[in-house]
Length: 283
Image (cartoon, rainbow, N blue to C red; front, top):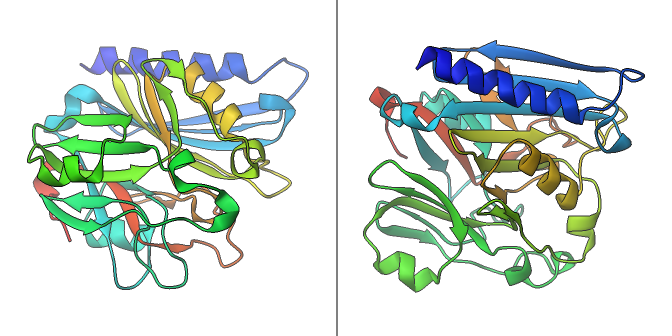
């Protein structure tokens, strides 16, 4: 297992280096290997999409889901920082989750845990356009410890199904079965912003944050994020809440990206967690 995963780590690193451009420009990567099954890669480059980019990747092997599990923390009453939710859950790592109401709190997309519906999809702010052009995918973690990224079925379907540990609607869906998915023609997709994404490759699950809105980090359009994730070997990938919400936290390291919100790390409604199996404890 150790040799296999380190080969995967090296393969991803080589893909990233190859995508970062020529020797005329600067790029650097810092890899932290936590154990045989998990590693983090921090990338700074000025050549990817001809722009300054600062990216964090946290990957772990699919076969390690007996050692790790994916969970979700949430607060439907008050907004809470990703780092706080992760720390309270004794998580190994976390990224911010789905879209939420910044004024009233709570998720604005369908969300269920252990067969209990926590929230249903509400229209995002009008500036995003029609919600089903954006919220068209679902992150599903089954009771058999399998992570799936899929085109969202109906809310009624998931509410009646008893196969899922949790379901979170988000989007847009970026990659499905190794194919780029169509994206809405709007500023939300076309302009560069910080992004948070989740990807699944043949062997690994990848948490991704792409910083933006600064001189050191331009962010990516969703089209660019699609291409980047496909280059990493993602078979399936989906967009989560981004912008000032984009956050990655790792135990004993704290925040590893640099959130763009003017107040630093932004409180959110939910967060995706990586838990060591013996620490599972949902809110």
